[in-house]
Length: 261
Length: 174
Image 1 (cartoon, rainbow over the protein chains, first blue to last red):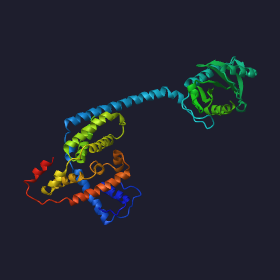
Image 2 (cartoon, each protein chain N blue to C red; image 1 turned 180 degrees about the horizontal axis):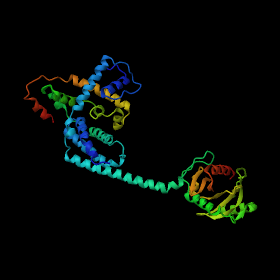
Image 3 (spheres, chains in turn red, purple; image 1 turned 45 degrees about the vertical axis):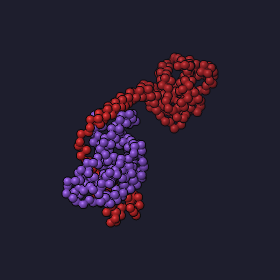
Image 4 (cartoon, chains in turn orange, yellow; image 1 turned 135 degrees about the vertical axis):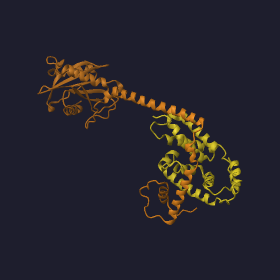
């Protein structure tokens, strides 16, 4: 047989014969007599094919086939049920597990690289430590800002790495002092700052377990009751800046701290 | 998920297999094999995806594999007696001719043509079921339609004869 037509012409003819939408980009010019005849042939052919064994659509299937169908159905139902319950279980896990980590996850513009998961414990401990010591009037810190050199030396020794105390004067916050706190596996340090209005923020830092430390973190936001925290990881150390402050203010402070460490 | 889902697809699968293989026994064997295979592979089916398409894919692959290993059904009987087939030239006659001509198409072309017409699938769906590009579907469809037309045109229109003898010949063909 000879067809002078191009494949795209054929596509259009097939679509016409099968009652399908004509694809875009296929010619719209009137069909030639030959093409029209071909569409008619194909339509006739289609009708004849569709009439073949049409009775089977209403004939009950043989028992062995029905039994196999039933067996397959059981498998598929089981799979669907498994996925449904499994999906719910996974959702719960996500809520209880990752939910904590990723809560309020924030991609800050300035700051360290990507975070996947943030160790919950660290941020929560930071928030609790903030909540405990922030209201303290007489002993908010163990070592005051007046003895900053001594403070830094002492905490550096206990945390096993030379620490720097970030300066936040530009943001209106002055160092109050610092204290040593117990962490999961190692010591943690807390630096406290206060502004003229008496608002306090704390910077909580310490070595992370190896797995968590390997996950470089962006600034991520975490809220624990009234205490908000920005958390990040840098060179194996976790940092959490906590305060009862609007998120933007806290983020501005965190952004100021990060390059000073 | 509602029960009876598979059973709803059974008549369609049987009919498609019947026309594809051209043989009632082979067709039900193919459907049976398809269901058995699906029972072994059910973990591969993604809940929510198109069950019908998945079953047709399984069936198509089985069909091609079987054809590779089993000698093709002998249709020479029909060929040799073709000129002795003198049923009245009615629709039933056309259907028999059509089935015979279908079997002379390459299996891949036959599958495309039947999925498009018998199963009324759109071309993209056919491509998914047969796991080939849409372009391949279209070119196979063109060839199948042209070839089938050609075969039907050259099929001798048997002379109209009183109706005693032809049925006997037909029965022997099964």
